Length: 71
Image (cartoon, rainbow, N blue to C red; front, side, top):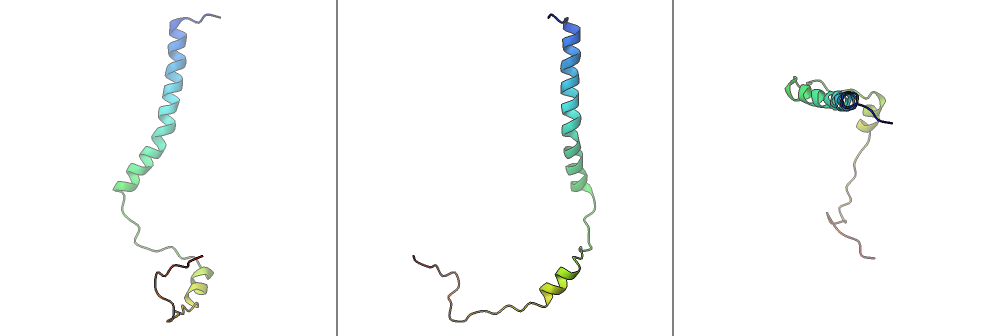
């Protein structure tokens, strides 16, 4: 099966063009995020924040910081 050069060129242009469109969306999104205003409000996670604020951290005074166990 032999295709003429013009038809082969159209296939190549179609493949390259679709790849360029596919790759342009993440590029546009990252450029948009660079130049957009940063969000000043924090996201609330509802019950998870309440559960974490109720936790109490206890530090063992006998254990050295950054100590390593030997096996």
